[in-house]
Image (cartoon, rainbow, N blue to C red; front, side, top):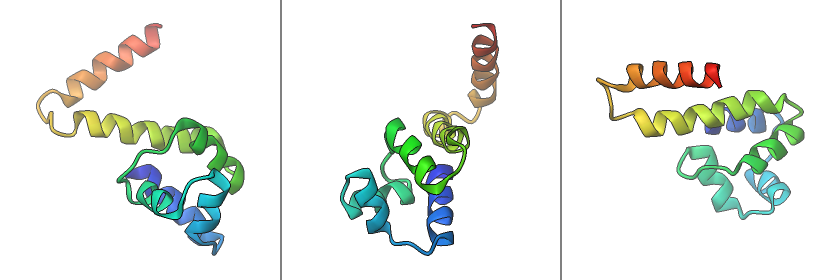
Length: 95
């Protein structure tokens, strides 16, 4: 829920309502609310659009968004998570 927490923090910092951001993303307010709460994953394009709206580096938000996805996949793999991350990191660095 790293991404959701960050966009909530940014939105509240601008003292704006969820419905304003939902409209900018062309989704309904309940859907945007679920994204902030981590109950629904934003699309990559939506993350980039939010970065533009918030005037932040898209890579910062994309990193949190991607980290949430990784956490979701490995969260129940306590014994293997670290090893899997190391293997994945080596693979990514090679390619």
